[in-house]
Image (cartoon, rainbow, N blue to C red; front, side, top):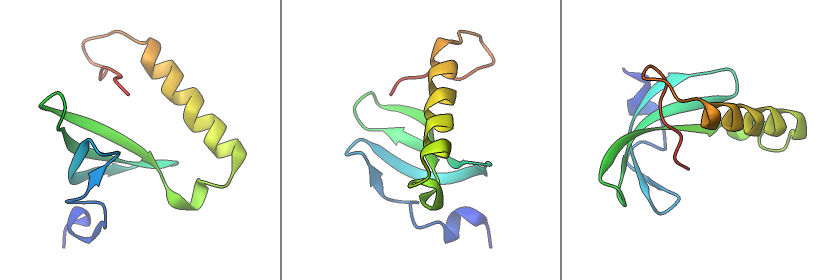
Amino acid sequence: MPLSVQDPLVGTLFDHRYLINFLVARGGMGNIYQAHDTKRGHIVAVKLLRAEYGHDPIVVQRFLREAKVVQSLHHENVCMFFD
């Protein structure tokens, strides 16, 4: 059975905006999903911190630092950072 079928977020609306379509990958800190941005009408990637790390301030800080770095990158082979 594919991982995305087992994932409880598939089919849910995250942050009142992103309709989670399927799980793309599992990373060290979080999971990456393909989602539909219902406000922009685009298909996007959404990376979410895994629940078991949500109360670890070091991991949360690392996750936020990664987001800031990605937001500063502008390259055709790197996803644009929106939110």
